[in-house]
Each structure stands twice: as structure tokens, then as C-alpha cells.
Amino acid sequence: MPVPYPVQLDGGEICMELVTDSDADAAPRLHQVRPSFDALVSLYDQLLSAMRTMTAMGLVHGDLSPYNTLAADLDVSPRLVIIDVPQVVELASNPHAMDFLQRDCHAMAHWFANRGLPVDEGELVADLLGYAW
Image 1: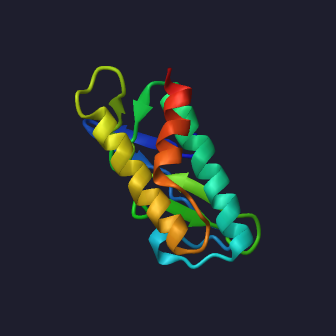
Image 2: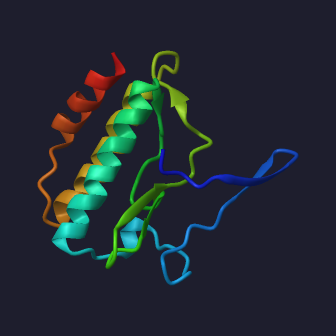
């Protein structure tokens, strides 16, 4: 999964790695960037792979949005990193998991579609559910 790795545990707090791009600058959140079409396609492919992995594991992020994803190295080799993962829920046991999955898909499909990549929210949900069961 493209998530920051934990650097330190201190009681109930987790210190995560600083995600940077090749210039050692902090990677911006996805909502802050305006990628080229090729970078947009690459970021979406990475997102889809990550979401498929999560649902195949029976997990839903629950708050996936362009604010909880980072986009590094857009001009070199685009890299998507998902953040704010501790609130992940189990798809089978959480009564709100399907609503969370729908919300995650809506937020991400809307962002990509608004930037010129036609992503259908309903098709995304259906695709992910195929990996869940």
C-alpha cells in the first residue's frame, strides 16, 4: 500500500515518515496540484490499485479524498501516497462501511473527472466490490 511508514510510536501517537518528492520538498496534497493528463492517469492508476488492495483486504479508508492523498514527483514519475489511514474500517463488520466506500469513491471520482479523466463513481464502486467478495 502506498502509505507513509511509521517512524516512531509514542503511547497512542504514531509519528509517520515525511513524504517528499525528488527535490526533498514535502509532497503536496492531491487537491493542491494540477497534474498533466499523463500524470493524472498515472495517479488514478495508483489510486485504483490501492483501493482494490484495501477492499481485497476487507478494508475501507473511510475518509479518502484529495485532502488525504499526497502527490509527489508529478514532473518526473508521479507517486500517490494515501494518508490519514488510522480510521480504516472493516468492510464486513462495520455497519457504515458501504456508505464510507461510496463516499470515498465519490470524492475521488469527482476530483479526477473535474480534471479531465472520465471516472464513473458507480463503476468504481462496482469494481471495488468485485475485489471485496
